[in-house]
Length: 258
Image (cartoon, rainbow, N blue to C red; front, side, top):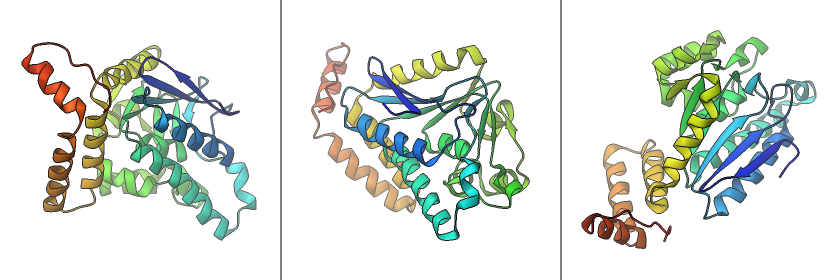
């Protein structure tokens, strides 16, 4: 467990908490600790889903640590962007579903962190945004790319070029988040979804996530071929045999992840 990133293991899932007061800014150390936590969780077979949340009342994560920026040279800035992108790419490629439980500010890198997750559950207090334009810079941790893929290029340009904050209800309307709940129900809603996902066949869940994610970068024909290949792969698993047997025997399946 790191100084700023805490991991709590539950039955079948893990809760990762960013805890760097006052607003959980994503410093280089926070990114490194988050990357280490994700590596550990990927290796744990008993963890089948992950929730990422922010500690404190103000923010999920209010972006990068701007106090680090004055000393950053252009070549260092590019490397800093690649560091953040690598961590968020790990979330996207994690063979387990990842849920962002967003309250308060999710700005800049914080919004980009939420975008890298598979699901975004927002509290009514949540405010999303890419305000880098107000600093004379651009998003660097995937905001221009994942946001456009999620809400479309026109809305992504609006969000990034105006720097405006998007309230939770509007984020839900445009597809930036998947559910909005009262603030006091945020963690219960996120962990309930994590528990539900953890109860599914883990190998199938991993292959579904891979098929959808990789298929986005391919033509329809290539995506369908990838799906066919993975469909064949999953039939080689013990869980597929167990799932079919349980259905025919009218009982609940017992998944092993094999």
